[in-house]
Image (cartoon, rainbow, N blue to C red; front, side, top):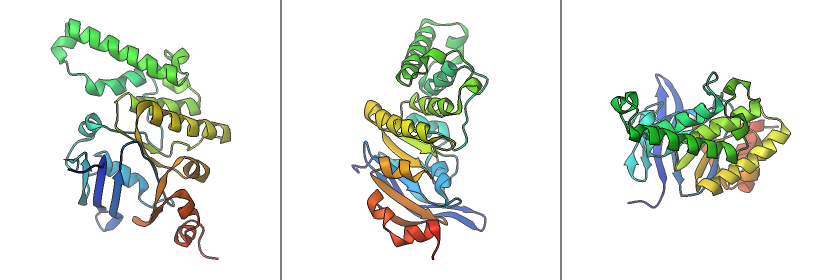
Amino acid sequence: MTSSLLEVKGLTMRFQGLVAVSNFNLTLTKNELVGIIGPNGAGKTTVFNMLTGMYRPSEGVILLQDTPLNDLKPHHITTLGIARTFQNIRLFQNLSVLDNVRIGHHIHLNYGIVAATFESFYAKTSEQRMTEDALQLLKIFNLDGQAELLAKHLPYGAQRRLEILRALATHPKILLLDEPAAGLNHTETEALMETIHHIRKEFDLTILLIEHDMKLVMGICERLLVLDHGETIATGTPKEIQSNPVCIKAYLGEA
């Protein structure tokens, strides 16, 4: 048995002749806040896709509290405790704000189609409890007043928060955030930093994020992994990464 929450060993992803990620290793413990950074095309989102079952790794192993994840479907991995957001917002735009969060809760409902069709007591109480939980989440992020609004009518920054809320509705142990600050202005990014700190404390989460906004990354992450062309070129604290010449070269090029 291992004391880590997530253990990733030798993870590799090949697309025919292209190696997108090579020998990626990661250990996450409870309540950590870790970032993955690197230039565009470095393989960051590919790592997320393997961790969440969207891609099946070519090599390596993924263990969530000693449970292998390599061959599991995305919905099964979600029920075990890994949830994610996406670089490009993937809300149900024509559903209400409330229903977008309720959908996150559905992964844990365990009544069948017969109970739902005939509105059994268990089905109705489960749906009621799910709605109450969703409203509570919306309240925490000041979106309860817009619960009946269609998701597509929310401002961009609020849509980002809603996608995080939908992930939280699955009751994750680990939350993966894929470029959560993408498209946000300075004020919205500052608010996002506070939000990430808040949800980690409020929900006792481990958070792994991908981000290009260096102010956000350096301001909230406890340690960082740097990818370049699919390979991990450095790991360390934000301060160590900022002064690492290999990382500087990968981002800025040589003089």
